Amino acid sequence: MTTPHPVHALRTALEGERLKAVETLAAQGGSVPPDALRQLATLQMALMAVREEIETHSIRLGWGDGNVK
Image 1 (cartoon, rainbow, N blue to C red):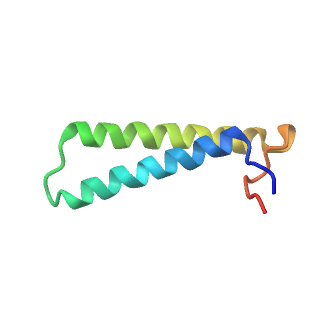
Image 2: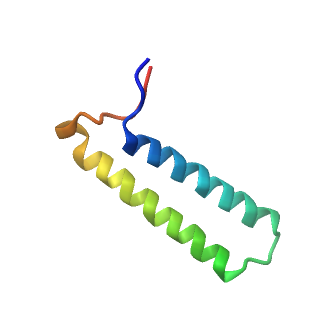
Image 3: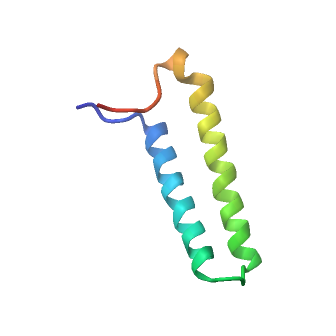
């Protein structure tokens, strides 16, 4: 089994952090602090940028879809 490219590891980490942030906000009920929304937005923008780079460079650099089997 091969290890994933570091870019895919970054994507996975960002996805995990985003999920934690969403779950934290959901647990707070109706009150959403602006700082928490800012953090979620930052994670989302970073994740979108990483996904875009993976898509842009996947064929040229052999990053593929990140699925390691």
